[in-house]
Image 1 (cartoon, rainbow, N blue to C red):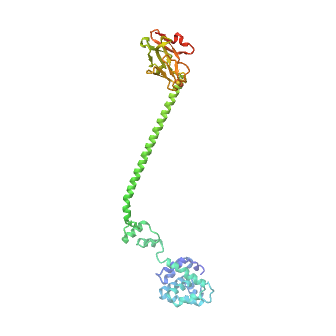
Image 2: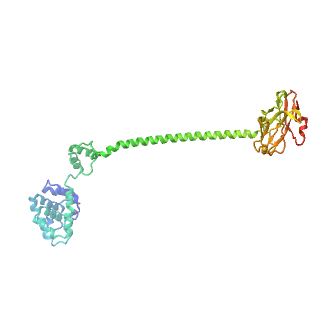
Image 3: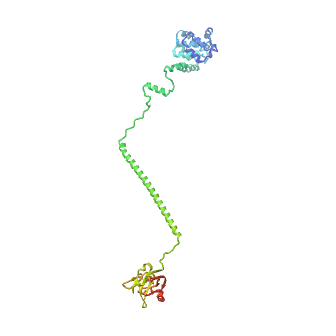
Length: 382
Ligand code: FES
């Protein structure tokens, strides 16, 4: 008996599901384990020892609750014994068969099943219904692999998550279009009037912005180009000035003065009493044909005032040289007669050159106050 009670719960349940054979139910149960081969003597001895029923008896008692036929008549015998023996048992010593019988008794509502429940200890009551109801619910469908595959091929709903193809197939069966998206985008709201009116303004603003940007770019480019052109031109001019200045620096600083000797024409070209002023501007000289101490001469007077160095003018009407600065006056022969001038005008050296022309030499001067006008180099007799 000890070996028989070592059957697993699955074996017991498998044997219990085998409802085909009533009296033969003991045979499959015995096939579960060779050591559990039931014997009539042992089966008969089971009632004598409550709580030590064989597995076959337990299964038979369990089936009797469902069949309600002949097994129902034999089955109560065992629970009856168990019921009668229950008070004598210690709490926690109920067999599996008693637990199953108590559980099925609750389901069928029989008086036999209702009684053991309160009589048993709370621990046993907790173990029987709580542990076995989920097991019974779990095994309502096919239990082996072959049955599960057969049920799946037969079109049974696949439990658990499904693939996209399966979802599409289900949607197609339900009439929905699998190509369409589940959630369509909501329609856009209609554009308000102020937005419609503002659209052209934005376009015009964009055009104005573009024109302003283009103008700014063009102006910037032109300004940069002009600035570069002006800068390079200024640099080129500066470099040219530097080159010219350096070239001028390389040459000696020479004064270009007029020659000290120059020819003023032939003596016959001058009439008596004539004052030639045409050499005043270029050479600062008056060429005069006049008399000095009653002797006709041609001489050259320097056109510089003896007061402070101003340039007097020949006044043909007054026949005198007049200084515009302080009013000094000189006669035609150069003698001062009015104004602040302290002395007569000075003469340059003059001579008749080899070609017969009169030649003036400004490198030599003759002063009247010291008697130099008597020097023959200071005049040409005519
Ligand atoms: Fe000729 Fe003074 S400079 S009068």
